[in-house]
Amino acid sequence: MDGNFRTAFTREPAALKQHPALVLNADYRPLSYYPLSLWPWQEAIKAVWLDRVDIVAEYDQVVRSPRMSIRIPSVVVLKDYVKPRKRVAFTRFNLFLRDGFSCQYCGSHGELTFDHVVPRAAGGVTSWENVVAACAPCNLRKGSKSLRRAGMALRKPPRRPSAEELRNIGRRFPPGHLHESWMDFLYWDTELEA
Image (tube, rainbow, N blue to C red; front, side, top):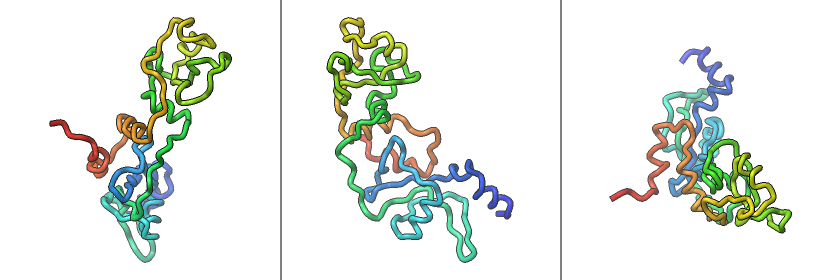
């Protein structure tokens, strides 16, 4: 590898993003599916150096220091098990994930906002059980009216998802790039068809 490539590789932000490491829990499952648990290559190498992870797979590229060289990790597994959260945080992102990034009135996948099923003006609260993802046209159409008054219906009733449900939904939305070394670890815990 020549010096120009090494300099370009370490200085270009795009190059740094091209070699992320998939981070697996000690049970060899990803810490999260959506967003996929990825570390920049620098973090993966640092974790290897601090003996916090084991390398499971590597890229062909090598980084060098004056005293050593190491192939960039593409899959690392934590040495200590991180217990997954049982409680799911009520965030806009998790709400959109629960609803499959689609409007719960018309099913469109465009620009999403969120809507209170029982309007706040009518005493509705901001909670998992009362807020849904909605496209702007449906949200404007419904406004502060009840579903019946607006002549609209929900595709499914809103409810609090479990952490496991959210992880399973997240699997349906893989990132734009999946390195081939990750494939054995992303879907191994799904049930096989008979």
